[in-house]
Image (tube, rainbow, N blue to C red):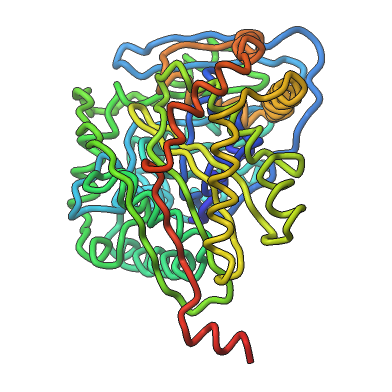
Length: 474
């Protein structure tokens, strides 16, 4: 459905939904607001209208159903809405090469019918009461979610759980939906700012399923049949991989009761989560020619995973380097030289690995010079601690992004879900803020020294082909 990104304020309902977690959205990199990565957003993007939260502080609660499904809630009585998400700890990383893209295709296909409802019933069920229903797929998880008034909590939980537990995958709809996904692939192929990240991930995780695109390829998409969908769901959509997260005006006991009812009749059994380790990393250079007018550059490397202690200082560094108009990249490349319209740093984290880098769009003749300017900024972070003023400003920026994001119920629901998937622990806002405040200039410099060895940096360029350069010049 539409790529997000997840760039992602991952903290925005899509999140999260941009293609990468860019600087300034460091909330997804802190312990409390989990790792994020490029995702593909389902259906159509919805605006998460933020609410001013007053009254008592949110109340967190966690339960485990008899079948192993985890239920986490954040009760906020002062709002009149709820956001409900069912998270499945399975994504494109869990796919064999021959079925690349099946997780994303399943995300599409669950909306095409369940044992109880046909396509138009699913679409109508939440919209008829002023809510909405959506989904997105990532490298390591898939999320199906709904937003509604609090009085429709039961409907929201029932609808989302029905999608995950009892999809019917009608064959005639599968044939049509493959055509939809093919058009989505063409859309990304025509977007060089997305294509350059696909090639960067391919270089960074070469030989591993994390290197492959979430959406798959035309060849693998055509090969997937209904039985493949059923087998994948049966193997990966199991109780131990599922988290139900709810934020808003909903009592935990009510959510647990409704979850127990929704999971009645579900017969899948839990299986161990086994994932192949990420292979060692080696820097590489990739150049792709396309009939475009501007070159797109990513300079980056393998970085830290979600469990690494350095993820919080790296989030602060990410903000200093590429977080907004005041960042070093923006001031020293865009403002000083006028070389680009857009330049930023990004951070993606998975359970046991991650990647960090810089994206920039510029004229093809300025790629080499731009790369040198980026390397200069990375080296500055290695060679000299940031000033107290710079560090304080970056911390405030990270904290502000987190707190503003938590004004939306969907963002809170997503935060709960990711926390449970990756840490099996709840981090309060105060805990997250304390971790950010504890970061020192030496911490930031240490991470820079650990990561920013020029010999370890990969370079990926999607550049104008010769013909397109001639056409542009004329």
